[in-house]
Image 1 (cartoon, rainbow, N blue to C red):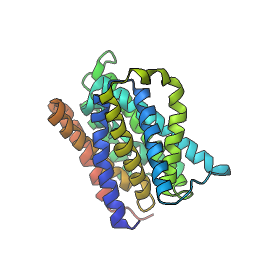
Image 2: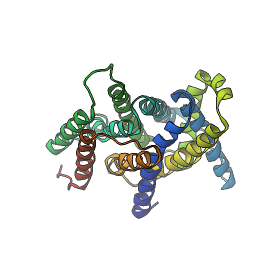
Image 3: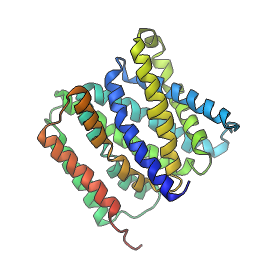
Length: 285
């Protein structure tokens, strides 16, 4: 994959990610079941694709399991907490809270990869934090929307750790294999907790779950992992940060869910800050 293809892949990923909250709202099931279902269906879709292309899944060896297992665990936490946020706080709150993840990447990338965090990057963290303060409806955990935002920020932290773990894992497996293994890990971690719930799913929920698993998981996950072979985590994060724009637009059209003016201002600060950080010329080491 060249740089132009990587850019197209990451932008397509952002659109598909924007649809994730929509399906989370549509599916009448627990966050754990939605996560288990999408991971299982995504893994099946990826296995069929890999087999169709004539390739075989290679078994990770030795230390390769560590970043792979960590990525799968973080992906499971990210999905569960995100769907909890959607159910509790709504699509706008969930996606705006999730958009905090580039701030976590900035901090964690410096700590884990020994990359120096500079003053402009601290400014990014401060502005994103200020944006989240504006998004917060009330500073009271008894408030549903505020609780949803807390879950969404946890989702952002988990996604940041997932993205950074993939920086190690992507060098050892192809994008399709990596996506498949990570979804299998998520399925293994979540299915035991919700197997009995599948019998209560409506027929329409199975359709939404299939679309979530194949389009918003198998395809988007593969595109994301592929793009990380050419883009660093921060560059990918800039584009993925546009997810709330798509999600809020979809939610407004489909469910007439409109965030408050204060939340929109906070979201605008978060998104503009992330884009500015990505466009800023890196300082010399």
